Length: 317
Image (cartoon, rainbow, N blue to C red; front, top):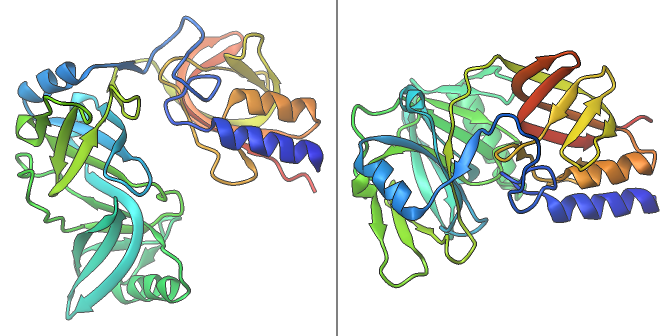
């Protein structure tokens, strides 16, 4: 129990998004692929001036300050736009409804209709009445169910102060517990601040999102193309490599972590947010399962450079 508590504390302390092998600070090992690069506010501005750009925005919990903004690859302009957050209210009038999602200190109202597709987390279809009932039941219990709302991308980026978002798909998703927005923007959405902090403000859906790079709060990233074969991996971790930049699964697969590898944060007691926490768990004799996706970079031994990875203490009872 003492070992488990120690590992849990380490995992919770080091959990971070684009963190690299150690789970904090953005360092990376290995000389292989790099899936994103750090950029500056002027580089972000230049990208938006060049035309419509899809960005992924992750917010600091309970605020409208960006924890991370990532410029996505050009082909993702054609993907659905989406919002992930927790529902705080829901209402229905006839065949139309509205859902309030917590964003910052306030909320964003997402509309839906009888034509909207409703799903459970596993993809099971729900009727609008079933979806509404599930959300209302959770709210009555004092819970804020995690929701993922999607819509097709508009022909041109939506005006910064236009808050309208009519979802064509709403999904109950337990993993959508952090506020996140994927949306297309252009230069109209970015305003620079001559007296930081913040360094700039990105306005989307009438939400003024602060960008604080100089204060060390916001990470700006740009995705990098990698045309090698994408694969998924899952299994028990057999060992952590020397230097803490890779690990080996029980089947012999070597998984490398580089700059841009996203390590899932340790939100629960059985989750580990860094490779250091994984190594400590293994030393304590605790089984750890890893799953994620990346690109296949070698076949002998089978080697995968991870784009994202999640570590979890395996229940072997």
